[in-house]
Each structure stands twice: as C-alpha cells, then as structure tokens.
Length: 145
Image (cartoon, rainbow, N blue to C red):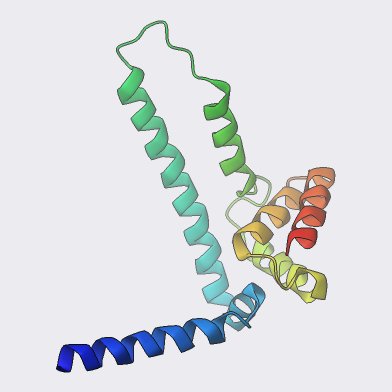
C-alpha cells in the first residue's frame, strides 16, 4: 500500500513538475546561472565533446586496426567536424568570452527558445569567424524554435 501511495505521489510530482517546466525557455536556465557557473557549464560541454570525439576515434581504431585497406569514410570526418563546430578555436582557454556572448545571444527575444548547446554552436562559429554559417544556423534555429 505504501509503495502504491509513494508511486502515485511521485507520478503526480513528475507530471506537474514536467508541465511547469514546459513553460520555461531554455534561456531561463542559462540566465539563472552565475558567471562562474556559466564558465563551468561551457567548460563541461567542451570537455564532454572532446571526450566523445576521442573515445569515438579509439573505438573506430579498434574496429578497423586489422584492416589495412580501410579508409575513414566521409561521415566520420563530418561527425568530427560537427563536434568541432561547438568549440571555438580562436577563444582558446578564455571561456568567459563565450559566456559573455551567450548572454548577449539570449538578450535577443528571438533567441529565448533556442537550446543552450545550439546557442553555444552559433556563438562558437561566430568567434571562429564563420559568420555566414553562424547566421544561417541562427535563422534555421529561430524558425524551428
């Protein structure tokens, strides 16, 4: 009986908790963070993408190490280039530049619904001097969200 009551209460909590979250923008999470938390968030995102790319490279090498005729297909190269778009090479270790530009990105009301990682990608592309690509991606995201 206790299990049923606990399950029911948990279900109600999750249902109402999810319904209240639906009304919030992705930007509200970003804007609620302190400056240090924003830097930590971006650093964590960069680290996760770097680890993901390195682990994928290791797994591909394990699978095809024995095949001397194997050539890395285009989709793997493209996968790595997509991951690299999230990381700004020109900024280097000064992640505060990214966080300040993310704040400016979310200052525009057209961008409030854009998820944080997509915003990070647009900001990183702009920082690396790829304005056309960043603007095209931004327009696509604004239309989508």
